[in-house]
Length: 561
Image (cartoon, rainbow, N blue to C red):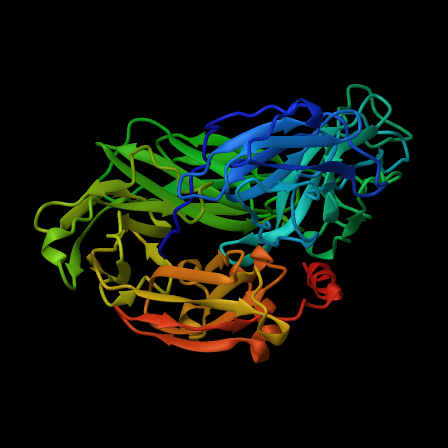
């Protein structure tokens, strides 16, 4: 699949200080913006909040002020122009000036020559904390246990839980996770400390076998899918979120063997790594498989699902092999890892369209679909030769995302094929036997679209405009989704688009999950607008602001994580 590039944050360019309004001698040609920063939960003023004023320009510039004891701030000697305001303070969520709607574009303040505005108030939501006690199966507090907040989200367009902040329990088994913003979360607890099961009678010299606790999700399940979402309310600490870990289980030892390709006789060992299939536990251990039989053993594993990976380098070439194993209830777990060689992936990049001969694409790069098991010792990138050819060395077996760039201004990525396989719309899967070329075509004639967003009676409005592919084969390709904020007059514009069939949505409240889960857009489809974009054609499409989604929709979606 094609990768999206990320915008780099801008640096602080200039600075203005906040002074009492009486000290300012405004000129007739300059204006001011002033207001108060308030606690959104209590409506109390916030002292020493940081307020940032940004110009709305191609290269924005920032000014900073700090609020006084009454929460007031002022920016003076401002030329006429377009501005945005942001505020932040430790213990609070950041906020922008404008309607208090989740993920809505900040309001643009248009300041006329000599205009003074004193109504630019900002309200910050206080953060919260989560605390509780972790007990072992006997009901005793468990010190040194790990607790982590996890957020429902997506990885490669699949529902999962994304790890967030965490901590460890103290000597009394207590924990507290501060600075948690409002939302819905899953809480996970685990401990790597071995447990001992009490025995009424033991023989002299008998060694007790250590046991391991499994991962547990609140309120008391070992399955991430069965975890209960907890709701964090702004400014209200969530207490007594306690865990009682399930009885510890006997650890499992995984035995296995690495199969070396014929004709190779490595003198040294092969690295073997095991990672938990469940994202929460991640790296689980490692060892080496040594000659002559290249057998290995990974002891003291929790009864869980894992992926085992073998990596080796022979004569300058990388090899890898992997296998998924399920150790839950297994009596004699084994794994056989067959090494496959990394390949040299060759191909071409062709530029088509007007002025193609004067355009240049410099590189092709790959990013691993699963970085835990596809780490490479070599840069996975190649320069493009004058004739358009390239060769990327040492590409390990696995799923890879593709990027070619820079895309010429006004152009788009038209096609990518690995042999006959369309890897623009599907995952590119590399094996040790892959020998097909990767051929990429870039066009200089992208589609563009612009228009206005309005609401009742044709009044234009600032909103987020989402362009989503309507063809099923592209619904899983993130690079075919685009979103942009309209300006203060409701105008929006999108450039560098791939021609095709799309649906357009103008939203007051935008959820980034729309880019990952096409099902979330289905309830909004009847009110969306269908467009078909043509190569090199600038289209115009005016949009109506969609009604805000049902507030319960996000909660229902989250409960199904």
